[in-house]
Length: 471
Ligand code: GLC
Picture 1 (cartoon, rainbow, N blue to C red):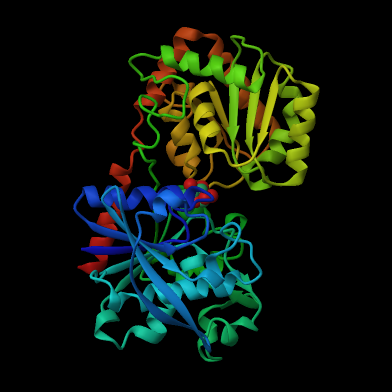
Picture 2: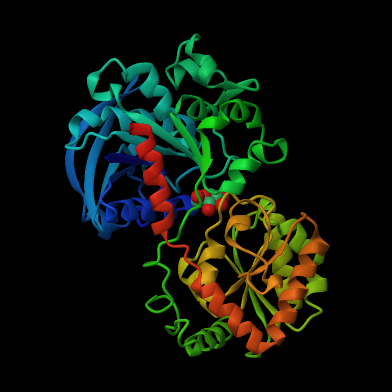
């Protein structure tokens, strides 16, 4: 079985969020189980030089983007036993950042088309193309419309994974012909609610649709979570399923993580205390034996920051410290900035996407707050568990599938159900109460660290899915 994993970002070449972690780890886990899996992604200018040095030029092809004919260089790199194809076109990808350009639709239409155009030139003929999010949603559409007649393509199956249904790739109808290269008759495939919707096209044309947790798979069939797509998903729900992500146990390993201050394991937690002290020093928080709550997140509403903002000062009445790392909406950045100014002994803020500091927070904090309004899977809560940092989460999406309240003496975190600031506050109080009983807390930390969220389990579920498609 041969899988080609098409993605707009993958660790360590280019990353902006959880999709990069998944793209970096799942193919590796599949390979370990003897399933062929290679990755195809754009060659952005942010790909670091040491990784560029590993790339070899294979050939170049011409890719149609509607009436345009665009150059596409194919580079190959071998990393951790996985083969990556990086597709080069400097006009589209030699830009600042990964997304957010005025012509993103054209850039990823090019990429989606290129994924199919390069196949005759590779020494790898995939049985399955696994696409991810709106950026690759046009692959199944183009495959069905323009390539099926060719024997090289006729048997290929497609899987489309939704990592976040909020980002659908919505554009005006004027793009249909001029950019996407579809005729008026073909437009219905990508037309939805009065505009062009690339994700809708992917959902409709792929053989299977997956999302990144079983709870989210149910949630996106409802209006509250689907951002309008429940009406297309419901009739197709037979081909939809949820498979929870794992995390890369080599990248996130407290016993060998080079980014943290001191290694530790569940057998010897002394290093965790060192990590906390050094983190407090680094952030200018006084070194005190109070619970330290970590937040590592994009600072946007759907991550639950409305709730945090609403009761933050109530929270600070307790003896605790909070460290926030992230960037996002101005409203939340300025709010946390003010709080850090006003309560320097309790609140530390660092703005940005800083993986190194993120690891230090996972290792040094006692608690990890993630009150998301919606969370397709969420990786941070699993990383926190691995570093013995107890998550406080809202029961939604993947948070619901990976974190269980410890109130019953079995769970690995603290949870609340409704999207309500005082319900969240109550969960924080319960966590702080738990922390004050150190013996009980240590048992909870042990239980958290014993959870298995490695890719092993989930890779098995993907393999079953692929097999079912090919049988
Ligand atoms: C998106 C989702 C996140 C998920 C990640 C990887 O970033 O918001 O919940 O963990 O994709 O699937």
